[in-house]
Amino acid sequence: MNLQAEFLVEDVRKDKSGRLVIVGIPNRGRGVRVGDTFVMRYDVPRSLEDVLDERPLADPTNQRAVSLRVTAIDSMRTLIEELPLGVTGGLYLEGDGIECLAKRTFLKTAESNP
Image (cartoon, rainbow, N blue to C red; front, side, top):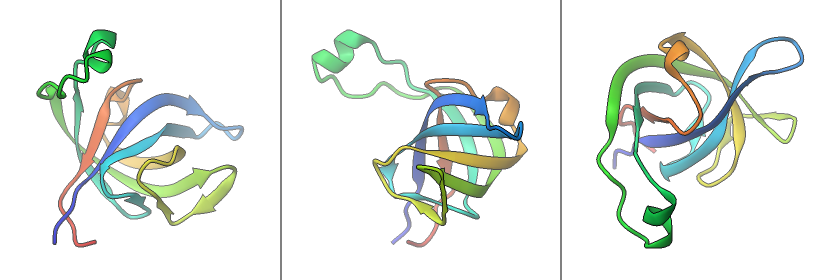
């Protein structure tokens, strides 16, 4: 079975050493693992009314191909190998496309074996 990981970016900040950290939550598919590569960045328009009325998610917009490999994951100040689905953590990424990340954007991995 092939699964993609989708990651909702909640914040983009720097850690104490000045390294960029992408804070967010794996929200669909599977958790995010060290070594995963995100291949797509996109937005999903969603208003407060959409949430309150439990409307289905809109189609992705502003899609952009990226190549961002997860080099480390921080969860509660501990480095871990996998950030489980539904758990907030910080991702350290390297590669192409990091400049297009912002709050409320999504990242998706290529399909992989669980």
